[in-house]
Image 1: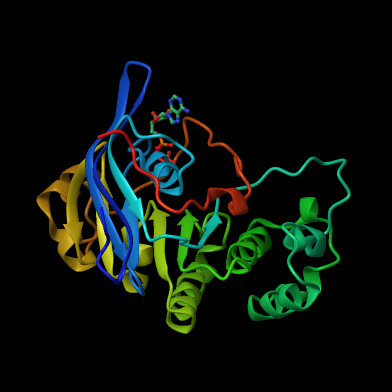
Image 2: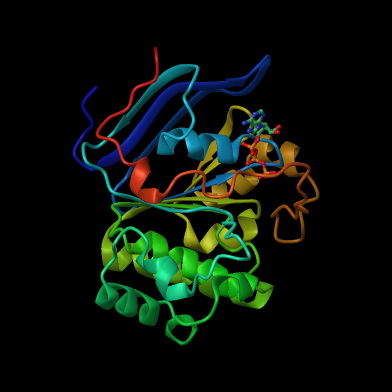
Length: 258
Ligand SMILES: Nc1ncnc2c1ncn2[C@@H]1O[C@H](COP(=O)(O)OP(=O)(O)OP(=O)(O)O)[C@@H](O)[C@H]1O
């Protein structure tokens, strides 16, 4: 399949099954340059599984996945685990994959983490870690930035600033952005398009339209006074922590068995 010129990645009819359990079915998705798309859905909806499939870390059981040849992806996972006994400061962490010291210094300054470069990675606060992980993703000079719950661990008061930063990065780098979020209200202003997922695509469109969609309302319920859903996010399972180095997730074109 050839992609039209602005499209970075396209999936059609994706399904993922773990054992007997079908976690994703018939998912279509397309993401273009300069577009910010947010995946939203309740716990266990398959958001991370879809992201991992798009990154090539999870093989779809059926469906077709096409990426622009040579697509550079910067991936910011929900979290990373660095062994507590490993002497690793932020600068070393950011230089993994042979990034130049000057590039690291430049990106760290842009994300306001220059003061942390010599701090041990294990001692960072949640918000500091998110900025460092975003810096790591940006050091790939990505055409597509993939962010799994990027504001997790960031103080509520700083979350909208974080999403503004992501929009600014999109404007400056002209990259596409795929985000996972559990809170549409928070990402409304930052996103161009929302895909509401619950095993399959329940509804999709501009954030205001999705927030009014009956499928979205059924999933999230409890609309607040602005007509937006308020949804508490709890985990009943854990995710892999950075299963592959971002350098390893690039492939020219990967297709699942149709
Ligand atoms: N490797 C795996 N093997 C078996 N089941 C898995 C695997 N990975 C995910 N699952 C299951 O698939 C379902 C979807 O998980 P996934 O992490 O994609 O959901 P999510 O929408 O990202 O959830 P959350 O909002 O809680 O992060 C869950 O029930 C999860 O337990």
